[in-house]
Picture 1 (cartoon, helix red, strand yellow):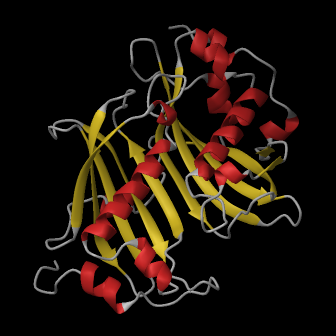
Picture 2: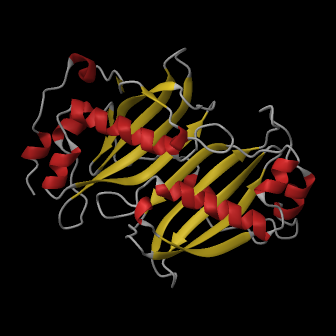
Length: 310
C-alpha cells in the first residue's frame, strides 16, 4: 500500500511545527450526551475525543473519508479518560488535541475537554490509534504524522497501571459474567462496534455485578451514595461485528477507602478469542459531590477476604 495519498495534504502550520494544541470549534453538550445524574455520561467523552482526533488529522491534510476510500481504517488500540469535573447539559465546550508520541505503527493523541466560559479543563484523555490497511494489518505511521509528533518512541503506553489492574484477579474477587449481542446502534461505518460503545458495556457489567451481590446502584442512591467514574480505560484486541454475541466478565479486584475499581473483559462465547479489556475507577461521593468513605455494605460485599489476598 502506498502512503503518498495518506501523507498528501496541506503543509503544517507554524503552530503545528511548534506542537501547539489544535482546538475544535466550540460545541454544546446535548441531552443525548447526559445521564440521569444530570451530567455528561462518561462514555460521551470518547465521542468527543473522536471529534478532536478528526479535527486534528484534517489540519495535517488527512481526512478519514479519503482513508476509507483507500480501504484504510483509523482504528482504536487503546482509549483513556480522566474525569476532573462534570460537564453538564448546554455547556459550551471544545476539545484540545496534541499528537504527543509516534511509534513505528501507532500514534498517541492527548486530549482535554475545555469549558469555553471559564477555560476550565473538565477531563483529559489519551488515544492510541493505528492505521489498518486493506489486508487487515497495521501500516507504518506516515511521515507527516511522525513529523507532527512531539516525541518518537518505540512503544506507546496509554495507562501506566493498565497491565497491573488487568492482570490475574485476586482469589476471592467478586465476578459476574453475562452474554450480550452487538446492536446496530453500537456499531459504526467501519462495520464494527464503535470504540465508545465498550464503555456502555462496561456499565452494563457493573450494573449486573452489583445486582448479583444484592447491592444495585438504586439501593446506593437511596442511601445518598454515588459512584462517579474517575478514570476509564479500554484496550481493543479484536473487533466485534453487528449482531455478534460476546461474553462480558466484570469483577472488582481492588477497594480503597473512597475508591473502587471494576475490571471488564470481553471474550468470544467459547472463551477462545479475547476481544477487549478495560477498567473503570470510581470515587465515592455524597449527593453534594464531596468524597466520602465507601459504605460498609459495599466493603462487605466486595472486599477481598484476608485469607485470599495475595
